[in-house]
Length: 69
Image 1 (tube, rainbow, N blue to C red):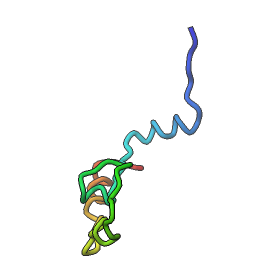
Image 2 (image 1 turned 120 degrees about the horizontal axis):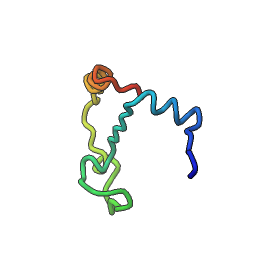
Image 3 (image 1 turned 90 degrees about the horizontal axis):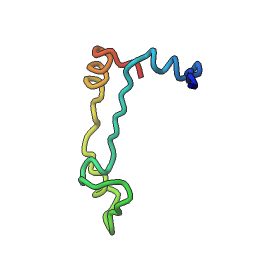
Image 4 (image 1 turned 120 degrees about the vertical axis):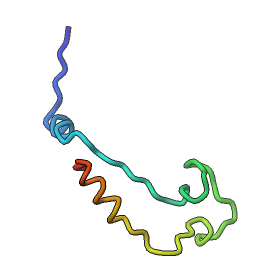
């Protein structure tokens, strides 16, 4: 029977416990998966961001919940 031992980086990652991944891009607006194309759409139509996105509330919530990564 072999015993697997994590390396230092793996151990540190698991000590931190929580990691969040937030993905925000054109697919958010079009309900498509990566690899699907947008045909003849202009850049403004593909990514119709009309105002600045305020991520501070989301970041504060993640921090309060204990996410470190």
